[in-house]
Length: 105
Image 1 (cartoon, rainbow, N blue to C red):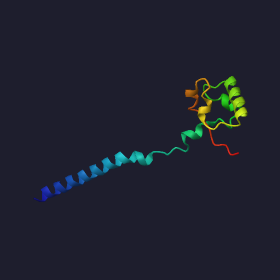
Image 2: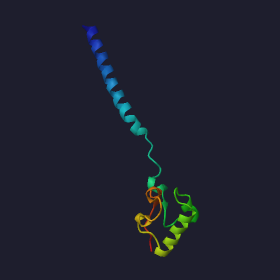
Image 3: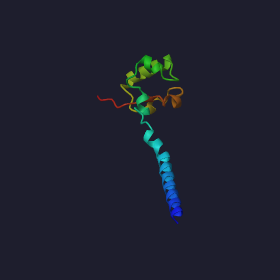
Image 4: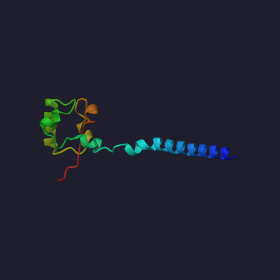
């Protein structure tokens, strides 16, 4: 009878260790997951502040489009929202790289 009790205790301990390891393995990656140092919006270029060279670095915007954006921005004063740039060729692709921040007047 003493042997059966020892086996039962050993099996119970093994089951407990298995359950704890399963929980640890399931949740451990969440503890290790690094939080990004920045948000995706931090990587976007503010179209109201960007100069010619910065605008030309944006995919799908060349020298001519960058000049037109600056010219249009000078006429408007500033852009209030990103949709004001829908006239740009490839706007749907460009909008992933740009943002419009609020301008304090």
